Amino acid sequence: MDFTLAYNAAHEALPYMLGGVVWTVGLIVGAMLLGLAFGVPLAVLHVYGPWPVRRAVSTYVWLFRGIPILVQMYIFYFGLLAWLSGLPLFAGLGLDSPFVAAVLVLGLTSSAYQSQIFRGAIQSLHAGQLKAARALGMTDAQAIRSIILPQALRLSIPGWSNEYSILLKDSALAFTIGVVEIMARMRAIASTTHEPVSMTFLAGIIFFVLTWVGVKALNILESRVRIAGYTRQGAA
Image 1 (cartoon, one colour):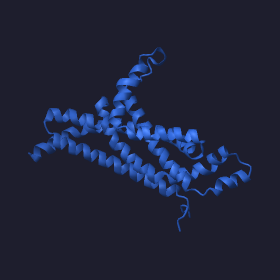
Image 2 (cartoon, rainbow, N blue to C red):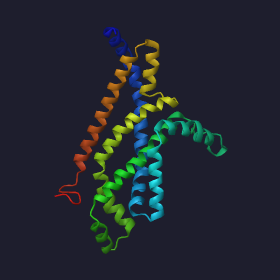
Image 3 (cartoon, rainbow, N blue to C red):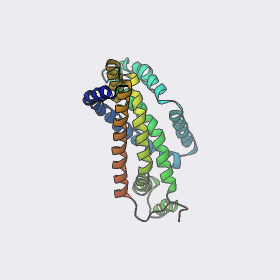
Image 4 (cartoon, rainbow, N blue to C red):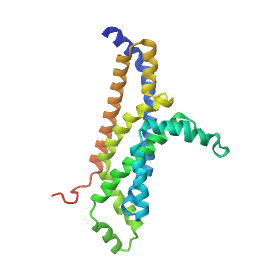
């Protein structure tokens, strides 16, 4: 391989590749927020809900964790969303967009994983806190919202950081349904320059930088909201 030629090709392709970062970041932000919006209620229901609800949540979690991301993207984009877009009620909403399909798939899958992160954080808190809140006259809903969740969300940041890095790598599959993110641009350039190795290496560097920046930001957030003096149940 001509390293000079590969370097020149990567250098010329970099601006175009960086344009895909906007789409990748959009996918991650949308998916993480959707996962958070669904994951927290799912975790609460998994811990405090009646048996049928806990069973339904477990089924949801196993469903989205058990089906590969690529399969889900095909089902959503070519099947479910394409069908919904054909209905008068949903016409013109852009549900047939590859970006929308990718965000939904990544977000719903992330909600399954995030629900387990939050569930573990909730269950790590001492059960006496909920009993004390009841003794003070608070309802379970008030106690969960005001006492349990603020602590659980703080404790979930390390797991959330891990979920971010996994979700970022999963987002690379969005090119298969037409999202013009980093991998889609890499493939387009590689097909014209005939430099697949250098283009793939460049894409890998971009993903590495995005992973490092995101994880670093979440680590800083964790340090700022850490609960002083907290130890998990059973810890010394």
